[in-house]
Structures are given as C-alpha cells and as structure tokens.
Image (cartoon, rainbow, N blue to C red; front, side, top):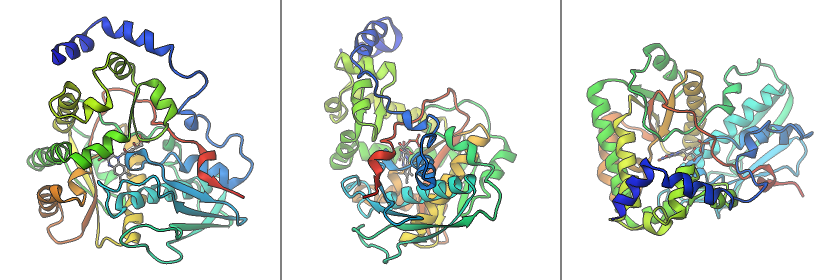
Length: 376
Ligand SMILES: Cc1cc2nc3c(=O)[nH]c(=O)nc-3n(C[C@H](O)[C@H](O)[C@H](O)COP(=O)(O)O)c2cc1C
C-alpha cells in the first residue's frame, strides 16, 4: 500500500496537487539560501565580508557549528558551538574539525580576494582531545596587503555543491581527474575493479548506519522535510524539493517513517543511496599520516579545495563518510576501506564519489552570518 502511494506520487499528478497545496504554507520572506546571494555585499568590516563566503564551506550534516569571535580588532577567533555536534556518528568530533578546515580555507581565499594577507594558528591554546572544549579552534590575524594574487578557484565558491543524486553515464575526463589529485593529501581512482569494490563498501556503510538505531536517529533528527520546515531550520539535511514537500504533506515522507525500518520512506532512502553508489564514476579520498586535530584541519582544507576543483571541471562530488566513522558497527567497513586505500598506514579522513551531474542543484541552506558571530 505504502509502495503504491509512493509510485503514484513519483509518476503522477498527485504531486502537482500536493505541491500547490503546501507551497502556500511556506513562510513568506524566509529564504534559507539567502546567504548564497551576493555574500557580504552589505558588510563594511573586511572580516565579516570574508566570513560571508567562509560560511558557505562544506561541512558534516550542514551543522554549521562555527562561532566567529570578532572582539579583537584585526582577528577572527573560531570556537565550536558544542550544541551543534554529531555525538553518535562523529564521537570524537573529527568530522566537525574537518569542517572547520573548510571554513578556514574559504576564509583565507576570501581575504586574499579582498586584498588581505592573514596568518592562521590552529588550536592556539592546545588541541582538544578526545572531545572539543571551549578553547579556540583557530585564530586568524590580518597582517596587511596580500602578497600573492587572488586564487583562481575563488569564483567557484558559489557553484560548489554536494551532489547526492545519480550521476551521468559518462566517463570522467582523465586530465580533469589528474588535476583533482594535485590537492594535498588527495588520492583517487577510476580503475573499474576498485570503483566496483568501493561502490559496495560505501553502500554497506550506509546500510549499516540505517540499521544502527542511535546513528540513524541522529541523522533523522537533523533532517528537515518540506519547504516550511527547512525555512525554519536552515541547517541539517534539507529535503525541500517540491517532490519531498509533497510527499511530506501527504504523510509518506516523515521523520517518524524515515526512522522506521520497513516503511516506504526508510526503504526508498536506502534505494536512493544504492543508485547513488552504483552511478559513481570514480572515487577520491583524503588521507593524513595521523589523526591529530591538525591533520583533521588539513584534511578539511584539502577537501574544500578539491570540491572547488570539482566544480571548476563541471564534475559533481558527494562525500560518503559512514564507513570512516568510529562507532562500533562500522568497524568491518572501516577496516576494509583502510586495507584497500591506506595499506601503508594513515587515517582516511574523507572518501567521496565523483561523476558528472545529471542536473543543476540549488545550494544547501545556511544559517547566515548574524547567527555565527560574536562581536560584543
Ligand atoms: C567531513 C565531512 C563529511 C561529510 N559526509 C557526508 C556524507 O557522509 N554524506 C553526505 O551526503 N554528505 C556528506 N558531507 C557533505 C555535507 O553534508 C554538506 O557539505 C552539507 O550538507 C552542506 O551542503 P553543501 O556542501 O552542498 O554546501 C560531508 C561533508 C564534510 C565536510
């Protein structure tokens, strides 16, 4: 019964009716994607201008846990908002720190674009282990006019997306692929046999997560469905395409159903991920020698840059992190990925599928600068 409803929705006019009905319920004047529209245009403080770009960085589950303290002139000090972590799927805050690496990379690029040089110190009061605490993650100090030219990848900040959809049936251009591997710590493969094995392993990570209740629930809680819910929560995983909004309106796609094995919502999510995995045309991964906080920041900086190169080459990228996570049920996939991709040691910090996109995506929501700045 559930399944029939789903198919009718996917294929038919019911969607149109339901979409029209729910569109009028969306909050008027709230655009959860406003941060992408001419970032920083109205800002006068160069730090705020640059931060308007930095907050567009990729980050785990779009939690955007960055707090930028601007109380010292000429400096930006980042802290983690510890109400925005992922305690089950990221038990040591490793991925959260990778996300800070992305913000730092974007901030540096934006400052350079604006004519500034900046020096950066990460964990200036020491690395926090095993969990982040109130000490700063990084301090960035403006040190005068830039010495190097603007970064040619800077304009791609606005095009970059995480693309979780199916990819086109088209082989990746080998020159473009070689270019991606020039980012520090990035490796990758287009080898058909390895790509097949990785498709299986990433999907297995997703399947395990879906059947690990605490981990799955963490993602469900951070998922917002329908235009109204996403406008009210411009963070987390946003399912507000018209189809999702429509399925939510008729009760097929709800958080409760996503959380429950056997429902259409649960089964279709896994099917969606299987198709995504199966259409991967290649994989890239980022490995660091150790797993210090510094390593994690470097991994995030590398990923931020890699994702801009991906956008510059018209490719699509989708990090796939479950099998790299530390909770117990992922151990078989974690070990298999490390055996396969890091046989000589090192910690794989990120693994992502790549291919050519099938469609153009809207950007993911952002909370906006005002929510992430401490200035008094
Ligand atoms: C460390 C890290 C891990 C991530 N892991 C996943 C993942 O497992 N699955 C996924 O769909 N996206 C993953 N992402 C992508 C984020 O969900 C995405 O960046 C965020 O939702 C914001 O969307 P955007 O990149 O389109 O701006 C990851 C990103 C980072 C930085």
